[in-house]
Amino acid sequence: MTQVAKIKSSDVRLWLSRYPFGPVARNHHLAFLKQILQSAIDDGIIVTSPAAGINPVKLDKPIRKTPTFEEFKMIAASIRGQQYSDTAQESADFIEFLGLAGLGNAEAAALTWGDIDWQRSTITTFRHKTKTGFAVPLFPQLRPLLERRFAASNGASDKKVFTVRKASKAVAGACKRLGLPAYSHRSFRRMFIVRAIELGVDVKVISEWQGHRDGGQLILSTYSHVRPVHSQRMAQLMVDGEPDNVVPMQGMAADKETAHVYEVRPRKDRRGFDLISDALPFGRLWHAGPDAVNNAINYAEVFSRSHHTVIRVYDEAGNVIDTRKHTCDLKAVPIATELKKG
Image (cartoon, rainbow, N blue to C red; front, side, top):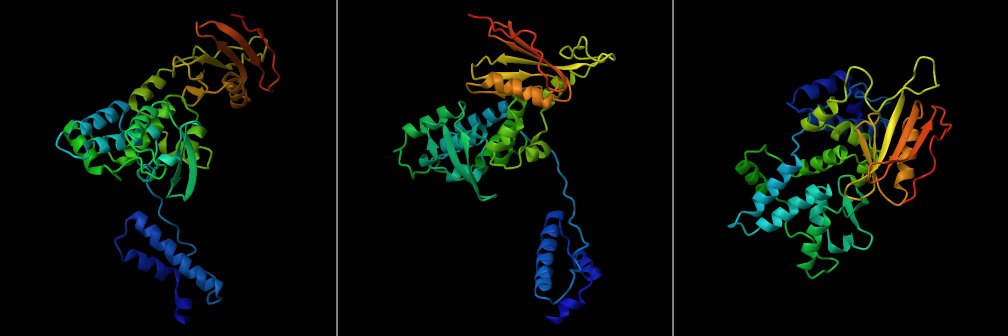
C-alpha cells in the first residue's frame, strides 16, 4: 500500500516502454493503470496521480475496405451457388441481411421473429457494444428476404431468424473466388452506410438506424468516405464560376450576393421526395412521409439560414408548381404560392 506513493510519472512511462504494445493495447493498459491510481487517490493514499500527464496514443483512422453494392450482390450469389455446402443458403441469407439492414453480426445472430413488427414495418434490436436497444425500419429492399424466411419457418416469436451466427468462412471463400478484397461482416454495414449517404439519406437518420445517439457525428467522422465514382460525380460540380443552381438574387445586395437554390422533386420509386442542391454536403436528401414536401422546404430554410434561398417544388412531369424565395433573415417573400391544380 505504501509503495504506491513512491510511483513517479517517469516510472509509469518506463513501464509502458518495456512492452511492445500496439496503440490500442497501450491505451487500454494506461487506462487500467489510471483507474488503479484513481482508487488510491479516493482512499487518500496519494494526492495526485503520476499518470495524470500521460495521454493515450492517437489512433489512426484509415479508410477501410468497403464493397460496392454490386460486389455485395456478387458475394451473396457466390455463397449461394456452393452446391456442396450444407450452410450455403443460410450463410447467403445471413450476409444479405447484414448488407440490406445495415446491422452488425451480433444483432443479426440474436434476431428473433418476435423482434420484427410486420404491421409497423420495424425491427427492434439490441447493440451489445453500447448496451442499448433501438428500432430500425423494415426497409423495402429487406422485406422480401425476411418474408421468404418467415414463410419457411414455424413463425414462433422466440425462434431465431438465422440458424448461423456468422459467415466469415463463406465470405472469405467468395471473395477469393471473385478476386475481391478480403471483406468482413463489418464491411457490409459500412457499405450500407456509404450507400445511404450517396442516395441522399440524412446523416442524422442514418445514425438513428445505427443506434447512435450523437446526431450523426460518428457517421460523418468515420463512415462518410464515398466511393470514387460518387466522388468524381460530385467533383463535376467544382467549376470555374457559379454552379447552374446558384443564381444572383435580384434586388438584394449591391455586390450581387448569390443564393442557395433547392429543388424538391418526387422520387421515381414514389417513396417520398428528394431535396436537391449543391449547398448540401452530399447533393441530395431523401424525405418521406405525408409531410415530406414541407419537411424538405423547412430543412432547406434552416440549413441555408445564413444565405438567400430559392426553393422550387416540382411535380412528376417536371413542372415547377411552387417557388419560394427567402432572404437570409428567414423572412419569406413568396414568388408563386398557388399550386397548379390537377
